[in-house]
Each structure stands twice: as C-alpha cells, then as structure tokens.
Amino acid sequence: MKRLNEIEWEKFEALSLEEKRPYLERVEGDGMPYHTLFAQQFDRPVLERLCALANRIRFINKSKEGALYLKGVLAHKRAMLYFSQPSSRTFLSHLAACQILGITTGSVRDAATSSEFKGESREDSVRTFSSYFDMIIMRSPEQGLAERMAWELSNSSRSIPIINAGSGKDQHPTQALLDIYTLMRSFEEKGGLDGRTVVFCGDLMRGRTVRSLSYLLTDFRNVRQVFVAPQELQVPADVVMILARRGIDFEVTDNLREAVKSADAVYMTRIQDEWDSAKGASARIDTSRFKFGAEELKLLKPDGCLLHPLPRRDEIAVCCDRDPRAMYWRQMRNGMWIRAALIAATFGFEKDIMSCGY
Ligand code: NCD
Image 1 (cartoon, rainbow, N blue to C red):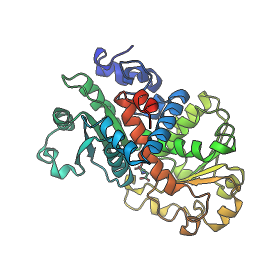
Image 2 (image 1 turned 120 degrees about the vertical axis):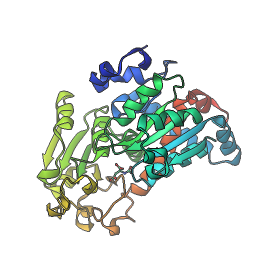
Image 3 (image 1 turned 30 degrees about the vertical axis):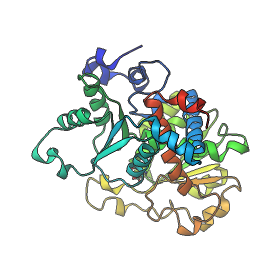
C-alpha cells in the first residue's frame, strides 16, 4: 500500500496518472478512492461497484424508512463545497448527494467572500477548511490544484479526502462517472456498453469532461471513439496518445452527420470560450456544422442516445429535448446518485449500504 504522506510532492507530481493512483486509494485497501482527482483512478471493477452502489442508494431512497436510513449513514460527517469557478449542476448535485447521506455542508462559491480576497493562499484556505470539515469537494480554474491540495492535506495533521469537481481544462472525474453511469444504464437492457461507438462533438480541445470520459471509456471492450470538431477545437494530443497507447479504435473528423449515422451515443459539448486567450477568438470559428438538431436526430439509431454535460447553448436544439433518446436531463439526475455513491464509498460505507436490509 502506497501512502501520499510517504512521498515528496516533486516526486509525486512527476509520476504518471496510473502511477499516482495507488497513492490516492483508501488505506483500507478496498480499491475505492480516498482522494478523487482524475478519471485514471477508476478501472472497470471499481466503476461497476460504484454504479451498483448508486443503483442501490436510489432504490433505498424511494421509501421514507430507506431515506431515513441513508440520512443516518454519514450524519457524523461534514463536507465543504469550495467552488471558485461557476457551477450549477456539479455544485447542487454534490450538495444533494451529501444531503441524501445526512452530511452537513458548508460552501464557498466566490473567492471574494473568503480570505483569499485578502491575499490568503489557496493552500492556507484549504487547510482552514480541513479544520472544520471532513471532506472538501472543490472546483477550480487551476489545473492540478486539487492534486496539490490532496498532497498538502495528506501531509498535514488533519488529512481529509478531496473530490475534484472540475479542475481547469484538465479533468472532471465525477462528471465522467455520471456520464459512464448514464451510458451503462442506457445500454443495460440492450447488451451493454462494450462494442459501442461514442461520438464526441464540440469543443474537444478545452472541454475537461471529454478528456475524463474518453479515458473511462477505454476501460470497456471495443468502444470506438469518434471526435467531431472544427480543427481549432479538435481533441488534444494527450488524449489521442492515451487512446493510441491503449489500442483504442478512434477517428478524428469534422463531419457530424456521417459520425451520427454510426453512433450509439453522441456526447455534445459547448464551446468553452471562457478560455479564449483573445476576446472573441471562439466566435470567429465556424461552429455551425457542430450542432445537433432535428436532422441529426433523424440519423441517430432508434436505440442510440444523446448526452451533454450541460450547460448547453445552441449545440443541441430544444426540439430534441422530448425525444426518448435525449438523455441529458436523466444524466444530470444520475450525477446526484453516482456522487452519493462515491462519497459513501470514500468514507468506507459501500458494504454497509449494499448489505442493509432496505
Ligand atoms: C461542465 C464543466 O464545468 O466542465 N459542466 C458540468 O460540470 N456539468 C461542462 C461545461 O461547462 O461546458
């Protein structure tokens, strides 16, 4: 068992994500993460356990007795939601997940209301939170910040787990979990996710959800990945390299309609123009062919599905919303259940919940 407090930061930082994984697991050795920082921490057995736990939690929660049982599971824990970047769904679904499990929460959503505004470092802010809380769920525009904070906390006298709720343009592991959970549920009674074709479309260069989900899909057998984007926003080299190294069948194209014809799932994303280096740079890119509307819907297989991490702009036409293949609303709700499962597992309550009498 490797421990994060037994390795220097510089040495840890230099490891590959796969090499970092064992340092981030629970010391109890049940394969579940202690800190959740990136998608590479989840292999297929762990994904399947988390999805089963999410299914179990949503089932238990249906009855009042079950919901009250769940509220007692982590009633002795407090979580801090530290979001220094805009968020609706990720914030609220983590909050709701905590509420389901009886966790008391606190939040900072704007650095202007915390001592960071007075010049306090993020390290000091996070250490402060760890004095009052038992877990930190954090979103930050800074790539790698959650990782650095996890190391800091594990090397402090009060180590508490960190969940990365989105870091820079880099990773969004809990979004990838809910995307996988949604895909697994969508294909559950149709032969499963293995052997499917998943089409990603939009801003693949700067969308962190794409990087995390693309990696998780490599845990499944023969899942083909197709990347559809204008050249300027195509999937970055590091993602392509991972796919090539893992022997994944993938294609890079700018033809959405052709890609949709072969798709089992289409994952649309918005243009992430908040990262533009020059104001208005994204607006100059022609994105008109990278939108999903009535015509694309006609091309999608009858048992295909349409996903989006949300928020959307005009990349999925509202007329698609009522189609049974449109999964994005369900996907959003799935996020609450899989995050509840992840939090329960992080605190070591997987077995209790799976074997309780409800
Ligand atoms: C995504 C994000 O923040 O990366 N949103 C989310 O968490 N559901 C996608 C986006 O902002 O486009």
